[in-house]
Length: 197
Image (tube, rainbow, N blue to C red; front, side):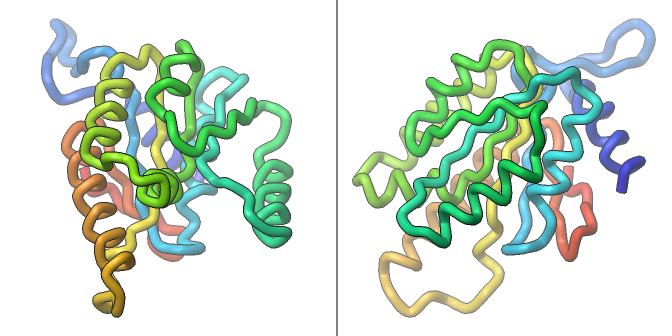
């Protein structure tokens, strides 16, 4: 996986909008380093996303959207922090990702994950479309590379309750909006990354 990760990290500095004299492609600031990593539960998406950062100088910023509500979630958070190691600076931000991205400066940033962020927004009664637009605007202003991780939840059966159906629909719309703007989109299945864009 190392060579695959290196390839993605190198290519994320390229874009799709302009060609330079030597043939290298560039993108507007903010979009040039945005990689969107999707996958199901335990697909290996977070480990893959973290592996991308070895091509950028540390320290790296980890924006955690999870809100620990019980002991099991506390244990998960502890395991994730231990896996990441000392090169990471963790910021817990369950709601205001645009502000947190703005405060990260040019530091490489990993956001994990957008579906937990969506859950927090929905439970708090926030405007999802407005929050997504604000996130996209913050990404466009970013000076450093950004990796976004999210769960693909639209491939199973139709949920049997209205809240779960709304969550599935909102997640799908959010994913489409982010994928349109990201420089790269990677789908991870069983630990194997597949480039979608």
